[in-house]
Image (cartoon, rainbow, N blue to C red; front, top):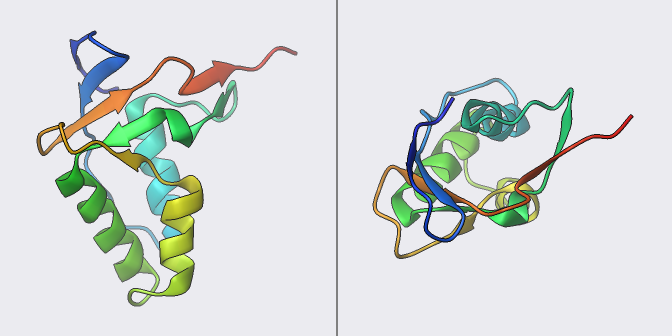
Length: 106
């Protein structure tokens, strides 16, 4: 699980390692899981996740590599399911806003 650094607006955590996968979507899913999201018990809201520019670029690079290169599909995956960019965050940090994942009620 990611280590909390401070709690200003949302909370800033160290970005997890971006791990290659066979499927571009799995790169992103694994990264979210490494942030602390458990898809068995909660719903993810990637709109409430911000990454520093360097972290976002690293995610895009690894996702594109797993897809065999940059493409419209990899760009759309990041636009639709990837984190937003926060230019104020240094490399290696992620801001998790309130509601970035919501526990499921069953």
